[in-house]
Structures are given as structure tokens and as C-alpha cells.
Length: 120
Image 1 (cartoon, rainbow, N blue to C red):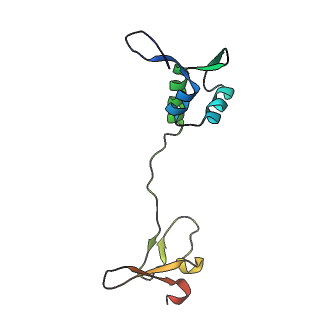
Image 2 (image 1 turned 180 degrees about the horizontal axis):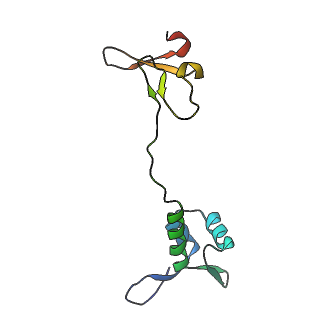
Image 3 (image 1 turned 90 degrees about the vertical axis):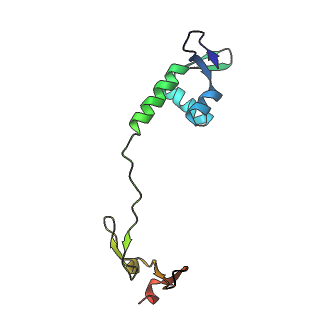
């Protein structure tokens, strides 16, 4: 990585390998970003040099576009018999889907798995 000699010590240019590491992407993906114009670069002989500020700008754009509200994984609530009481759009009860109904032992040990057609 080539480094600016100013007081900030931020690099001016970087290599493809360092860019891959900074963005957590593969070489093919970084070259695709270069071809798409998302990251600025130039050739110095046979070596590809990348402008560090364009890498930072791309990372900020990518983070901003992917910044969505965090949602917890929603698992369907099941009743005592194992049927789904609450779920997403178009959900069917567990027995209709052929799922396995989970039945707790009274002793509190492990769970038994009983096929839905035998759970009645």
C-alpha cells in the first residue's frame, strides 16, 4: 500500500490484494467493480493501482444502500399439539404440511419426534 506522507497517514493508492482484503471480496469481484466504474484504478506498467479514496467511497455507498432495519428471524408459534397458531402469509398448519410434530416429555428431558399423521 502506498502511503501519503501527510499527518493523516491515510493511503493514497492501494493494490488489488489490499482492496480485496479491505472489502472482504474476491479478486474477480474487485475487478468487476473496477470494470463497472465503482472503484477508480489505473495501470502502472503491468500493475493495477487502485485509488484508496474510491474504495472508501464505494464501501460507504454499499453500506448505505444495504442499511436496512434489523429483523429477528420469525419462527411460527406452535400450540400444545404442535400445530402452527401464528405464522407468515399463506402458512398452513404443521399437520397439513407433513411436518414433524414436536411433543415434550413430561420429565423435561429430550423431545420426541412423532410424524404428524401419528400425533393425534
